[in-house]
Image (cartoon, rainbow, N blue to C red; front, side, top):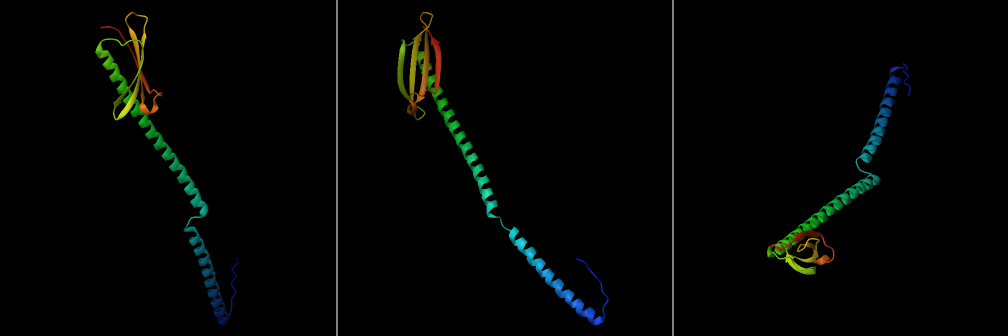
Length: 159
């Protein structure tokens, strides 16, 4: 845009000044309406931006949910193994307190401890030493009868 100054008479200058004022007012309105349109447009989010944000949130939510689920599963697994070890240790203590080694073979038993029923498999085998036996005690929760979660072993002889 080039600005050219022309010296005019007073009346012509007044007409020109009025024309310039009107023209600049129209330009100002035009610029303001264009700027407001841009401002109104930038006040909200586009559908694409919202969809990307929702996708990111969904990914994070799934990750957090999976992590929490794994932690709960691990906690329940640790609780089950701890209770099974208590059951096995108690049964071994009962056997050792009798002072007499049990006879050879397998024995299955069900006991209740900690509001759960537990399957106990006791295997007794001879060792290479006379009078000594090896006792393997496996424990499984009642709902998983053949899935033994812990096995304790000891060697016992006559007192």
